[in-house]
Length: 169
Image 1 (spheres, one colour):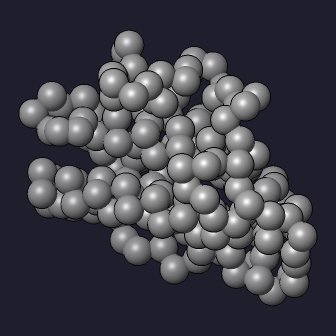
Image 2 (cartoon, helix red, strand yellow; image 1 turned 90 degrees about the horizontal axis):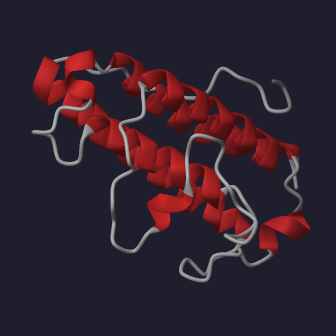
Image 3 (cartoon, helix red, strand yellow; image 1 turned 180 degrees about the vertical axis):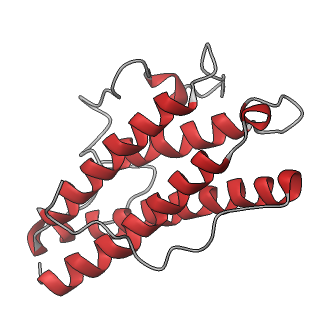
């Protein structure tokens, strides 16, 4: 795949991940698991990171999120995880997702981009799944920023492109 397209895709996807991170870091402790918020702030962040991770995988088969996370997020009953994940835990999961995303885009070839993704419920190409995944991350980053604005009258600013370079750690 053309390096310009891979770089552009990473700069924008990385910016969406950066915006999610900024919202996560801006969340005050008293809002993190405020049960009056539905969904709770921490859960929206976790949900976003889980699906970021999954959609950067080839399929559900063989996918396992890093510990302490489980596949419970895929339960059709929609049950919440057994416990509230800490900000540090989700920051670590975010770093995992950022590295996986960068590596996925860096290794993207034209052939791979044209292949059908391994998730039958989405039924798009691998390239389109990356855009779909980026939109999902940005959707929830915006949701978390709205919660911050409504509860503490402050939210992180827009990130126009990620500062981290493609192919670096």
